[in-house]
Length: 131
Image (cartoon, rainbow, N blue to C red; front, top):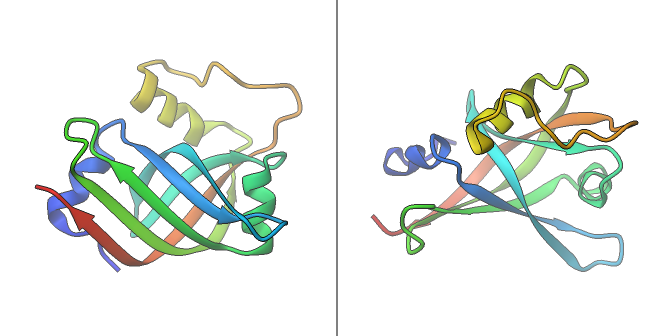
């Protein structure tokens, strides 16, 4: 699936993406993440200690929505599934996201013992609104 061309600019901006996953109690959990679109996949960073990581390992289905930081009436929603989990022990991905979102060269909130990964999502459906 490709993202509609009129909405690809959202990945060039510091758009906050809300990730909805199914929690262990059967309720939905939603939280914001930094993200990007690379090689046909939405990608975002997590640490293995997060509930969102456990949710996605158990059930890889995900809904993602982002609101244009320049126009709150313009958004993109993607639905799909995590198709791969890549190691980011080098912090290469999270550092690139820190540059994009914070303007700094390295992610400043590392915690001892964090095991960072990149979640790779294949979108299968999009909904968009605004122009």
